[in-house]
Length: 406
Ligand SMILES: [Zn+2]
Image (tube, rainbow, N blue to C red; front, side, top):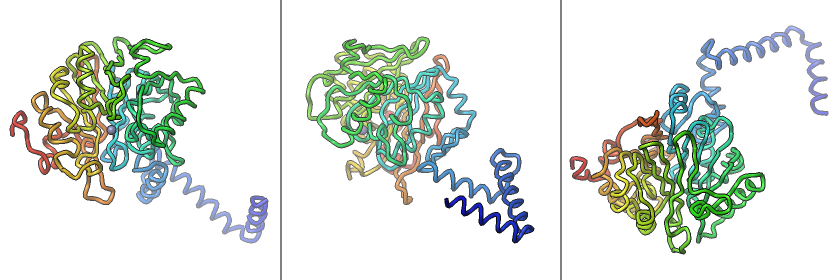
């Protein structure tokens, strides 16, 4: 009815003021034409920049564009060229920024057209940062594997999402879901995650616990081939089947292998879990280790580091946040973590850092990508590739260990 009325009014207007109507129509057509030519880069009209940028900011939270042209971290963008370079590698591992000042994990592993998403923190709203980033590398909308390491919010909230930011389960087809065999928490986020996970299973996904994988039980496998010569192994640790008061020790542990190169992911595993992991597995030297539990003082024990002798360590956290402690030395990545890592490598990278600015966070390295071209390792970061020890935050808040020249 309303649109009929509007059409009638427009016809009356056109009859009364034919010249004015023609001018308005021409102007509107001209504006549309300019917008099209501007977005395609044929012409450049400065005022359209701000107009169109505003629109993009409205479509995704935290400046994360929906456009497939670039991948926006909070502190930089991967150009189409870089995306194509990374996508052409044999293995790439992406440590994602999460669009807020909260620490959390989200790691994308890409092997050809096979993707594994390990965790989706830090809050439900992180889905607004994670989904468009992943879509640039997972172009068929299918995540072949999803791993939820343990039932804490900073690892599973983005699977759920919000009404404004669709979560991982809503945004992608998740074929095989592997998660924690045990939990203690009765949080709403765990229940929400499991409800959506079960709905995904109803829709055809497979779901296994890490213990089922280890036992090759109920259709699950201990080892999955992701691509030619690339395997994903679910490792064993005793807290898959032994109760503990520390939720973190339930973390699913995974080893990715391409030829000589090994990459280790241990979620938020703590020292007891790490001791079990070292005891139960013949761990190899690792080219990459995801800094355990965001660089906590209670993870990345010398026992584990001695076993894996890491070359590169990537930490997912908001560096220097007081979310968990007011003691600066224990803030992620902690001084104790730095001191234990230092004898092995100074190639430590960190996603995000607290900022004096209003938002409370900014990029450190930003989105960090470690990738292999047939065994040769490269690193790309969306903000910069400064080593952790050379950052301003490190210089102001950490003591340089002897192994790093301190
Ligand atoms: Zn965590």
